[in-house]
Image 1: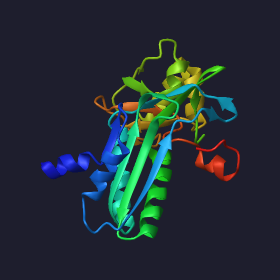
Image 2 (image 1 turned 45 degrees about the horizontal axis):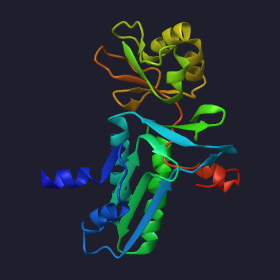
Image 3 (image 1 turned 135 degrees about the horizontal axis):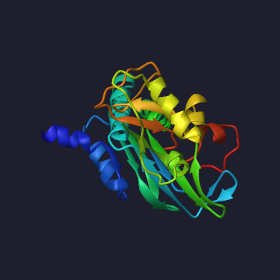
Length: 147
Length: 97
């Protein structure tokens, strides 16, 4: 039960902001064999496709989004020589400069950590049912990253 | 049958809520798409162009999938999680992440 709880903390879709230090500690504490940690942090920027952006909001498919993040973590653990991976995405309103998405990968060596981290964020963008709406001077615009 | 909507699809329906679509046991996804196209032409067009995918019980399905009363059906516009457009950035078309 404790193991399941711990693993569920490694894959989350949540409204509230997160602490990078706490999440980094969560991954590092999983194994003392970790010798390299790679991280990707996605943050909210104030410009997109040539337009100013004043804020944004993420819609998600509750249940399916969590399921896809879990699949990403599990496949990363299978396909790369890594020890642990954390995949976390926020939903709801997000102010410019705030955290949106976090991937942290722990491995024995840096090359595997970098490769897995890149794969996780690319895969997340491809298969996770999350949608972004940006507030621009022209109004609210739904973003299609992969039309 | 209730059909969940997400993202931009919510703005294409007058009240922005989930769709209620007529359905008979044994219908396939394509039958559902046909009904949606008749009642909500804008949404139907995106489905036919495959810009919007259909999921059943949280898995993306083909149009020949048979539907059951208890199925959870959703229409999924193109995903846009993360931050920044990697492909556009690689082509130098984005402002960066």
